[in-house]
Structures are given as structure tokens and as C-alpha cells.
Length: 70
Image 1 (tube, rainbow, N blue to C red):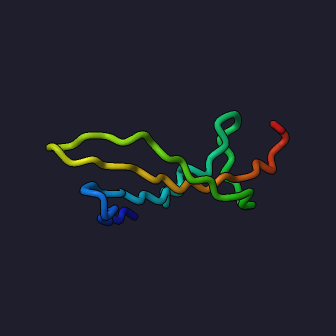
Image 2 (tube, rainbow, N blue to C red):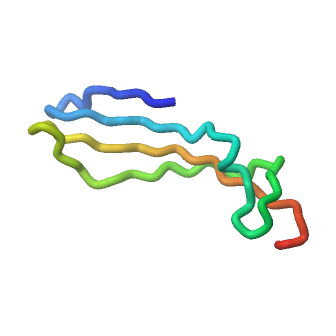
Image 3 (cartoon, one colour):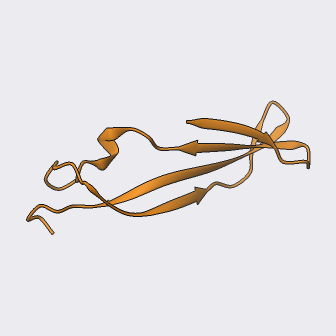
């Protein structure tokens, strides 16, 4: 899901939410997590796009791996 909003300072803020099921897979063992750990929002520096400033806010879900790879 993506939303773009005016930042009232001549630029835009892009809000991105990770909703891909593949993001739940453990990087070590590949098992899909079922327990949510927390949400984390990552902010980028200001980017210039066609003369306008754009800031990106990416909200990511963090998951617990319940497999034995812990």
C-alpha cells in the first residue's frame, strides 16, 4: 500500500507499507513466521524528484521465527 501526501513545505511524503507475505519468511531457514514482533518505520533523507523534495516513510512488520534456527 502506498500513499502520497503534501508536506506543506513544497514537497511530498510517500508512505509505503510492506504487505507482501514473502516478507514473513525467515532469512535463515525460510519458514513463514506467524508471530508479529513489532512495526518499524524507516525514514529516508530528502530526495529531489523533478525539482520537488520527496521523503519516504516505509513501515515494515518485524516477525519472530518460531523454527529451531533461533
